[in-house]
Amino acid sequence: MYDVIIIGSGPSGLTAAIYNTRADLKTLVISGVKWGGQLMLTTAVENFPGFPEGIQGPDLMANMRKQAERFGAKFIDDDVTSLDASSRPFKVSVGDKIYEGKSVIIATGADTMWLNVPGEQEKIGRGVSSCAPCDAAFFRNKNVIVVGGGDSAMEEADVLSKFASSVRLLHRRDTFKASEIMQKRVLENEKITVIWNSEIEEVLGDQKVEKVKIKSKGTDNKRLRVHKPKAEGNDLLSVEELSGNILKENGEELEWEMPIDGIFVAIGHMPNSKIFKGIETDEKGFIKAGENYATNVEGIFVAGDVYDHEYKQAITAAGYGCAAALEVQKWLREQE
Image (cartoon, rainbow, N blue to C red; front, side, top):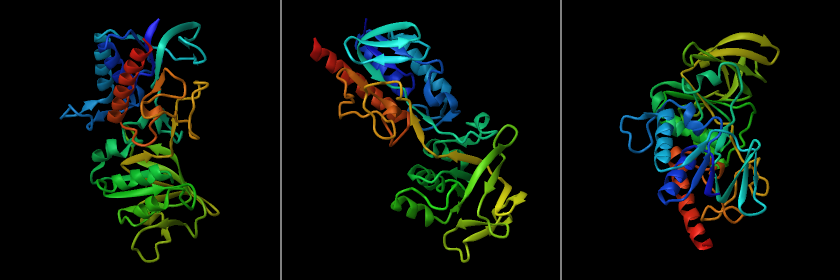
């Protein structure tokens, strides 16, 4: 019997483990086969406080885990298969084994929705990113692409425009779904060129991103429909004017290549909440919680990106983990 079972081992889960073990609670962390969260896929992390020279993402997570282990947290590097929230103690299944806990913190995070095109996955951290606030400074005075059409893509493009020489915003449709205020911010930014009706087909380069292969539809005489602020006749631009070269032409469809230094994928995040039956989520799958990070099931709390659809930063995830742990401690005292 554990006082608290933490499901997940990103910054939120590990921070919760540190706080709970230091409060002398018997703590089990079911960390997952791929433990450590999204920071295990990053290289240099320069915006986490306490590391003036930056730190590698996997090193940061290893340090957090060692800290939790030092205070007595137990780890199982396997995936949760189910959570029985219908009675107490709560039962968490891992394969054919069942672990019981007086309380639970769900900290399973959210996965970036990637493009799933050739060359993308092996270049994550080598020019492919999903977080402009994390990585924009690495692309100072360089040329980048943002992929997406929602508020997240607008935010990424806006942040990158403060660092990059140019930002190309690729969207597969001819209109954005982002809010009007976010669209206005992007469409009036002189550093940002929107390329409509276009999708990345392949990420090219040896050790890092060097160029991309793009498919564009609805072209007019080998010209692409674009939006470029304060430029006359900017509805159509040739591939050459975008520093690219045509590979194949098929009616109104073009395949072309463009040299680029970085690609920021902003087509959404998928919260890892599907296995938690009986736990309320919003329409996108993010777990709902009150001010004290309690879910609709008393004794089950939530922390990190499986709950946070707004900030999605390592430091905010750690903060949520701290808050959830303190709320668990308070709740357990009340039960006693």
